[in-house]
Image (cartoon, rainbow, N blue to C red):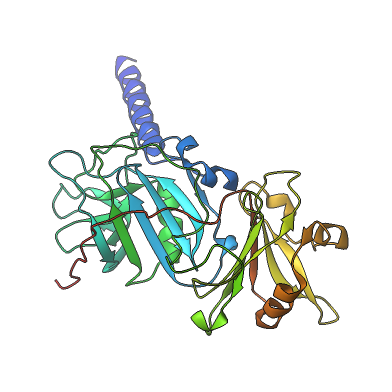
Amino acid sequence: MITRSLSLLAAGILATLFAGTVLAQGEKVSSAVELARQADRLKPGQWVWAPQISPQGPLLVFVDLSKQLATVYRNGVRIGVSTVSTGKPGHETPTGVFTILQKDAKHRSSKYNNAPMPFQQRLTWDGVALHAGGLPGYPESHGCVHLPFAFAKALFETTGHATTVIIAGNAAHPVSTGSGDVLAPSDADVPDTGFWNPERSASGPVTIVMSRSDQALIVLRNGVEIGRSPIALDQGNDATHVLTLTEDADGQPAWVFAGVSGHEDEAGRVVDEATRNLVRIPREFHEQVVPILRPGTTLLVTQAPLRSGNPGTNLTVMSSSP
């Protein structure tokens, strides 16, 4: 009986430790997409993943050491944000511009007692990588960027070899987070007023972003801003909506809602005339945009402003050679 009791006690201790390990590696499901606008509200281990917002285009991962956040952009639009844990004092995560050199979903460390590093994406040959790991709410790794397990898996399935990863900031000097802008930094020479300049990017996936707070619309093609216009957009709510351009049974273009995190119930609903009438766009600008729209074009409606600040300075370009 004593032996059995000890066995049960040991099993309970192991179960508790295992549960703690799982918890330490983050939430199992994405938070609502609105939380991506206010990243300071994400608790350690929380994340947002909404790839439907921009399903095509160049990918960029930006890790901010100061805020302990990783942000994923595709075609210039933010599709994910996650809390992270980076290098602790004495094992600081290096800053710079990296590319993903190697991917291994079941990697184990050759330096730290064969420790598991699920969904590892190597950034340097001396041991710095993105992977699932502990997330205590502060820097505690040996130099890697720890991600929530489920977020690490989703990111692993989305990136490719040579995807760009930027690491900037200073983990020893945290800063308050901003409003969580939707877009990667725009080029400095892009004017704030309306314009149409499609030659800036002649081909590639098209994403349209409408901002309620700015009452403005921008058009991105292959991650480059090619157009901007003031609009009148209903401000009755601050929810994020994502739509995809498709064709109806008669071959006519139709906008259909995508079910992003927090708005799964919208998936597949066709935009009706009443909803379309809530948006007013200058006729000339509308006529310029229509010819470049194709099935698969995405439209993001957000409360967030269109521009974000410079995410980091004095970055070093790291060599990818072994």
